[in-house]
Amino acid sequence: MGRELVMTREGAQSFFGRLIEEGPVMGPRERISQPGFVMFDWLDSAGQLRLKYTTTTIPPKKAFFPPRQPLFEFESSQPPTITAVQEATAFTLVGVHPCDLAALEMLDDAYAQEPAEACWPAARARARVIGVDCLPDEYCFCFGFGTCYGREGADLFLTPIGRGYLVEVLTEAGGGMLRLSDVEDATDADREQAAAFRRAKSERMTASIDASPAEFADILEEDDFGELWREVASRCYSCGSCNTTCPTCFCFDIKDEFDLGLTGGRRIRSWDSCQLQEFALVAGGHNFRRIRWQRVRHRWHRKFLYLYRDFGRPYCTGCGRCSRACTADINIVDVSNEIIGRARGRA
Ligand code: SF4
Ligand code: SF4
Image (cartoon, rainbow, N blue to C red; front, side, top):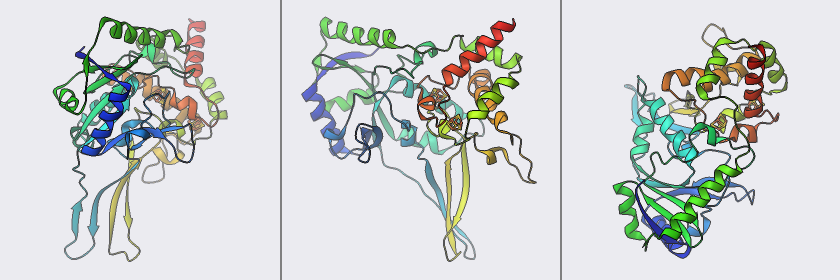
């Protein structure tokens, strides 16, 4: 744990105001079209920032990889020309919860796999990150996944306390940001309030997957849950919302878009979803996962088995976004516990 200071509520308001004056800041703010719902977006003023929120629908990975991202523009002249679209502006991402910090680190690892992807680390290098602690709702299950108290990749981390926030200074860049702030040394009482907040967090967590990540991976690897996958698939609409809202999903599609005159255009990459029917369609018309239950099974195998084997941890943070967003009310914890229960019942 880094150096601990205190930022009062008023101090935080003025700190974030100065940060926004200094350069672009993305953070949680209320959706204009849906008051009460919070989304990550660029902030115009500190008054828009909502540091107290349960979760967002779309995760903060969008700051580094927008859902639709131009890679380069081309002209089909002779010779053809290609101009890379390169974003170079430094920015600050504010208000990231511990589970989402863990997700960003997972994507660092995923995109670093050979052949390494270049856009993600370049965007990460442009950003400073400020985390904030949170309290769970009935969908959160991060406690059993070790992502509940993460600080990975944060420069500063804020925990709500009575007079404002306990501020952990985790990097030099974090310390540098505090020149914009009036902070005070933390007292024992401040630290106790932060500890009480963390205790409340774990005490309020009601959902959990009933097996360790290692046991769950073994269960998925050994058993055939064909009947269960078909049951889940009979409810699933293949809408892809579970992937679109997932902070650890990293698949993307690439398409060339031509201008109307067909003289040029741009190459765009956009988030993709393994639950969509055409995801595994290849040249020649073969589809490796044409049937819906195969795609449902793939999602569980991918998150809890394949990537667990590759990276030593499940590619799920327990954020619960996929369950909240599912149009068919398919809950990742309920399905996982059903799998675990059936496997143990057969043992
Ligand atoms: S699989 Fe669901 S619970 Fe897990 S990280 Fe993705 S959205 Fe969150
Ligand atoms: S969000 Fe629900 S209905 Fe849509 S693809 Fe995912 S599991 Fe199926």
